Length: 100
Image (cartoon, rainbow, N blue to C red; front, side):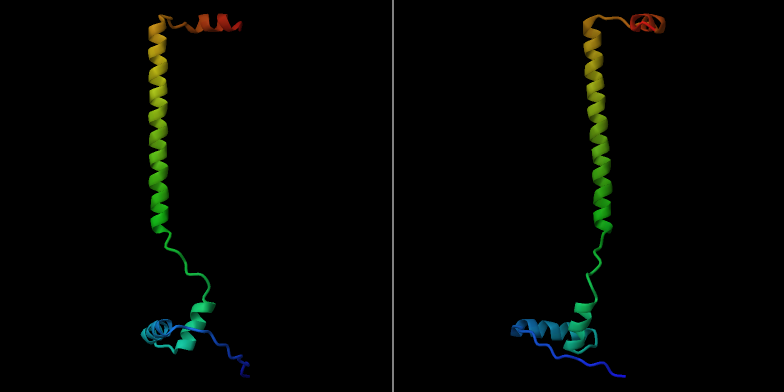
């Protein structure tokens, strides 16, 4: 059983019409069939491989920056500790100061 078709028209510039006809020819389709396929195919799947790679590089850079910040903060804290002249506590002394 044949399905009914409804004619539809769209306005195209001569350049657009020529471009669609060229693309359709390359695929062995009529311009109408090419437009139908393009319209009904849905969104074109994006090539996410480059985006995934960029995401991995960005995550690695962020981790490296965070590590560098942690190292600098630790170094600065150690320098302050050394300059203060405060000594290290033995575990028993630390527990005593904490009241445990």
